[in-house]
Length: 615
Image 1 (cartoon, rainbow, N blue to C red):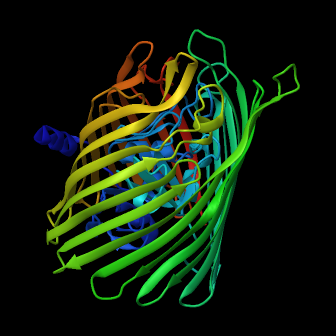
Image 2 (spheres, rainbow, N blue to C red; image 1 turned 30 degrees about the horizontal axis):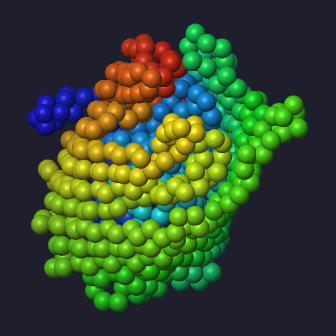
Image 3 (tube, rainbow, N blue to C red; image 1 turned 45 degrees about the horizontal axis):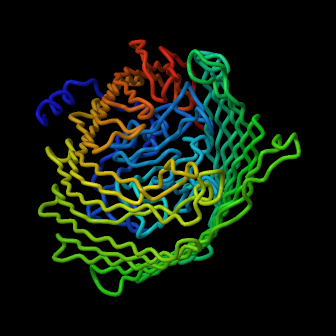
């Protein structure tokens, strides 16, 4: 199996990016560069070799070269074991017929409440429903993305049960002014526009962006449009202290086209916003951060549903390096989330409030990491979470990373993950149950990262077993449906990722995952394979990628429905000069008919063309 996969990788067409500046040439960085410095696994900057957790890093160059405006579809291709549902050309939507469900190693929930999205380390989820809004995350704002493939609840608390996606945004790092823009047009009157710019002088820096997408959609009543703005500003108070702020606002309108051979569903109007302020410190023996975040939103659906929600809190942590090779991190955080949900058309137009409440939780944690003989790193952590509804939840973790040679890293870890019940599950509608307890899981994994041929070939292999219980499910009883902690899962799997760069003109990338699930799970494919390669010649870049999905369950009840498909995509780009490049890209070039959401057929061949400006 391993041999056939490796031969297939080596047979694929390859990738690089043409350019004139060092920044453009840095595109050769890949998602499994094992020398990458990451922050998500420990909250402090550390070499990825020195943390037991399995972390994928998606670079800015990878994201920008996809020419995607939405971020999550890029991650779905680039991260082994990660899958994000889609329903059309662009736009995920919410409510019935929506997509944007995130699954990591078969864990995700519907709607997704088991994989936590962070924006610069700040949690992102709707206060009432408990899930992130996939349409709110755009590629143009992103410096890189770090994905923990496995539980990270010890550091991040609720919703980090299955893993964490930390979106780290751009900031202006060089003095002066820089700007870029993109315009795209494609099938079904799809238009995508982006402009961003940054400025830095002395200790002050600012970065801002604006995006607009719209499409008629590939089906009747599947139109979508979104406007998204983002602002980041920072100031170095002195060499030890930095203060920064983030603000984003997105508004999108979408229509549910409904299942095929059925009438269209409802139209939605969503506004999502986020603000955060951080005061970071860095000294010789200690570093840390004090952060305040505030997420808010308003949802309107033409069936009369209306909600306003908020999710806000404080994050405080400090890492101490008391002696060589040792780091101790102490942290505490406080979150409060909730809002009001109602139907303004109910009761003959008088309206009905389903719920108007909030839940709070507070936690403290400690995380210790120690390096022995410059080869072995051990770490352990413990978190005690207190929730205003269910009380206390202890969360331990531990692991090791061993580097016998500079080219080899061995990892092993065991970690607990949990998810608090949401406002919806506790208090809204008929199945509500105020006595729910958190969902829980334990994850065990081992892995190896290996470099060959003077780092021209990098490989990563991970084996894992995840067992969960207390899953919240709606059970039919004598008095009707009720949410109860009755579900279980047992997932065992293998993940592989590799990059091969034999020359400066060729790069090959691949990732593969296999998950054996005791019970089938919607939106979690049993196998997924992504192969990508690009050839660079002078100013021309040709990219070819293949995505294979096997045993994707689109429905389990009342009867099982699953799909298998293979997608062929390509992108050709040409640099006219150092300021302008043009590109054309095609998706599903084999015109495959396939489904990701049950009874929602995906687009056949779609084609886009556009240009990028760099100032």
